[in-house]
Image 1 (cartoon, rainbow, N blue to C red):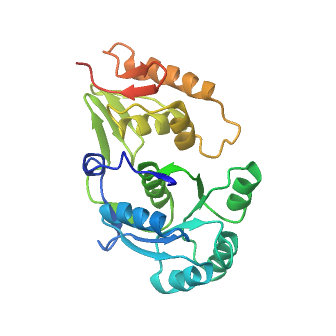
Image 2 (cartoon, helix red, strand yellow):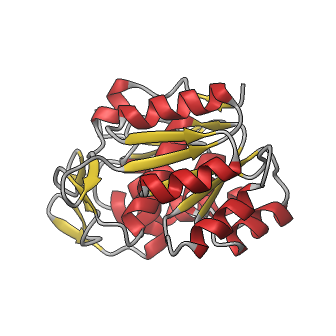
Length: 253
């Protein structure tokens, strides 16, 4: 099995704002992989988000579906039985579609990652992976893309007296503004989107520094330190270290 779906739960999904197209219709996702078990699990996870999902097991069929279905986001395996994922992407782009594409593959070399991104891919996840993390990546791609999607609820993320606005990039604690760099903001958003959940350094590196292939865990420690000085200064600590496991954001007891 190449997916860890143990953390995909109704509680984690319920706390996230649902995404939809500008006209209110469901987000459309195309999942392309030749492993039926994998596509079934991915489809289940994305339909749980309220998205409309179609799947393909071969590259040529994926190109046809992309033309007919007009997906808002594509999950694309690099290794396929007929043409590979890079060729699929080239044909989709040749049709004039700028759909965000997340490459999915068992390969984990630097050359493979660079090839996928250079070909026009927008993100890259290697097997094994968690369903929850992959869904989070896709949501991020949709927000950053030119595809018109809207949140059905308020863009504010609130944990205790800490408030983060995903649209304005403003952060307040107890009503006082907190100035953050872009990286600090992304790190805090990841922590706040997963309150009371231990996030490992590897998970944080993968989510916040997804294209920094030479990234080391020390950068996480440095930025956690920066956040603590800004977020916890003068307040009860919210950012906690779980020894040997990672970091957790939670309100004071």
